[in-house]
Image 1 (tube, rainbow, N blue to C red):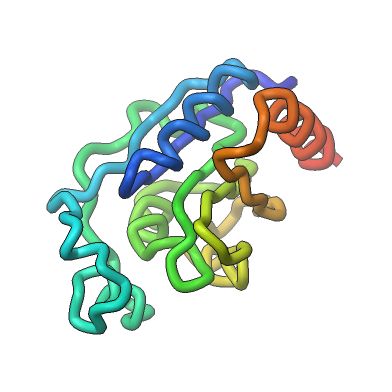
Image 2: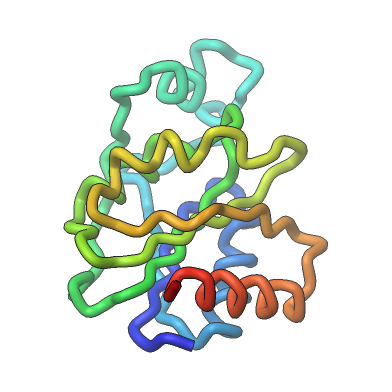
Amino acid sequence: MMNNKLVAYFSASGVTAKVASMLAEVIEAEIYEIKPKVPYTDTDLNWMDKNSRSSLEMNDPNSRPAIQGKVDHMKNYDVVFVGFPIWWYVAPTIINTFLETYDWKGKIVIPFATSGGSGMGSTNDKLRPSCKGAKLMPGRLLNGAISIKEIKEWAESILSDSSK
């Protein structure tokens, strides 16, 4: 596998964090948590409330929630796996904030997600403009029931495909 890999993830409830940790371990990558400048509360995440913070963000295509911190030495990474929960059939807009923070020219970006019921939807279409210059690979759901073996097989396969 390629060296200089990073697993960057946003996790609202801890589910994506667990998967990101397993992925980073099996591919021997650095790991980085994408943290919102203002943490999300349970009320913020209530998708049934049209006025909740997450609902308002996801209904505004220009929403870019502020994040705290930056990845040190992003230029040193060739491959960046970006993980997140699926919100409204796409990545949360905080992922666009993260992607728009860096220069992706010549890098490989590989999305992965967790979801309570929906698929990846149009995630890559919504992420592509935010990571200009990157080779954006197809994303995959890596839900909690997936095994370490399955994660490793997927990672090896997508890394092999990305080098073609």
